[in-house]
Length: 347
Ligand SMILES: [Zn+2]
Image 1 (cartoon, protein in one colour):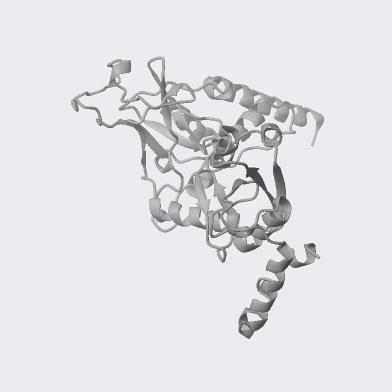
Image 2 (cartoon, protein in one colour):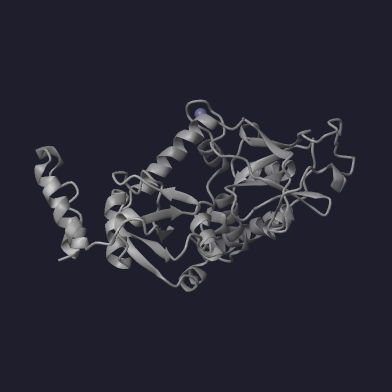
């Protein structure tokens, strides 16, 4: 290639990027758009948009070009029903404006029809194949005759929003309705697969806090319960500092509650019968169940109290008792519990 050709192809690329930034100014700057009912929007995968943003802001050829849109959009649809494989983003209502609630963490981003059309031209998309979206207002208020149109401003009272989360108002009756519609069947299937994978872990740490008395300090209860909501996970630092009497235990999804209680016995000297084990406010019970059965994930924080009902005894007795049981048990059961790392730890 001649030097002039190289130069001109770079010029073209630079010009293209500039045009992209101008055509999609708000998206390029990462600004959210105000949404109105009865208008048509489109949904794009957020990772594609960030790739695009990186590409159009990078100079030279370092940045990777985003994929073509038809490929990306097809991946959003299930093969079985050609419906949407992602749930649409949640909305929020702030200062009389409807906005996408968590544009940074949502898997999909709402864009305007104009953005979609221009993207289709530049990134090989077919307009009709896009995932279109409309803001739907559901009338779940007491007076159910509030019609909202694009022209009509929506007053704060029309929002049936009394549960405050993080100081901002939850807008429950504004919803994104998509076409094609969301495929709950396929999403459910995928989520249970993901859960299975997540529970099939090996040699990971969980944290167990020993709590005196019946009630744990708020910090422990919150940290223990909050893990269920990944969005509001406490930072690693606050996790480390706030619990005095705690240990990390190395476990797997297949570890039984019996094995876990033996580890706790060993660490805190509380006989397993006296241990009341919790994750959040839920009591973890049933010795033969596994951590996976109980939805205990790596990084979880459990807390345990001492019921003090049963008399204390030496952990070695339990282990030798257990050995006898297992020896008497049928061949098929042999070793299932004793192959655990407990017996080797306590000698
Ligand atoms: Zn489907």
